[in-house]
Length: 292
Image (cartoon, rainbow, N blue to C red; front, side, top):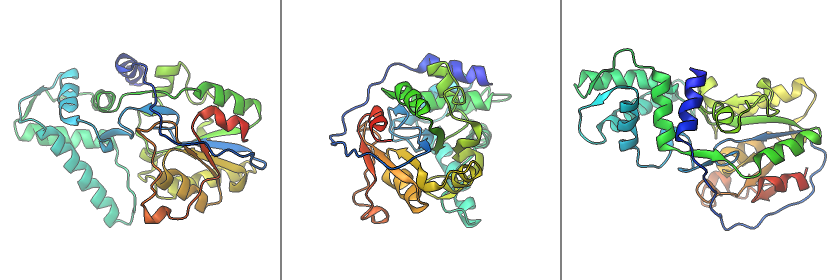
């Protein structure tokens, strides 16, 4: 599926420029740092809808029906009905996980699509759903609901950080197709771009999402294994609630990325973020090279 996933992403992706967020940078030379960890959507990737997957605020009903058609499933139901079934299945799984004690759950989107197709077929709203490649369906929907493109300056900042001897990592709300966007659009896997697998932390792998602290705690443990304390690592993300707050609680230094109005989330009215000030505010990814 890997190459098919990348091909679908390439086929549907077009250059996408970030929109000014109207913020001024807040830059300073930070103390000694050994690692820099990044969010993905809205930070390393321009995200047309500002978020990942079905949580993205986009016109998704038509996107879903087009995705079904792309994998050979004929839609026969009322408009937006498929989307409603999909969202209900996600909500059901979230509620089940919360009852089990997971504050911020993440779904396995492939399992969600499997159950959704079964429900749609039971209602007589689809034809040709038997044997569908569920991973392909998930990607076909994602590329329509949330077009992406590499953020300007991404390759330059990654190369510069590596030249400076910094370890690179990822902490992201994501699905299986998220890491595949990099070889699809940049021709290199995240590992080839300098992100070791042991420093890649995705919500879909653990069933737990940001703003919960679980992924950050895993990152702290992985950094500890190579002798890096949290205070010598920088977390870079576009969302104060998801990226800055949980990272700061565990001792990370933090950089709020204000490079695209679509995805910039300062959370000024969120009580959970009250009084929280990131160490840096960067409006271009390459600003980081002047600070670390």
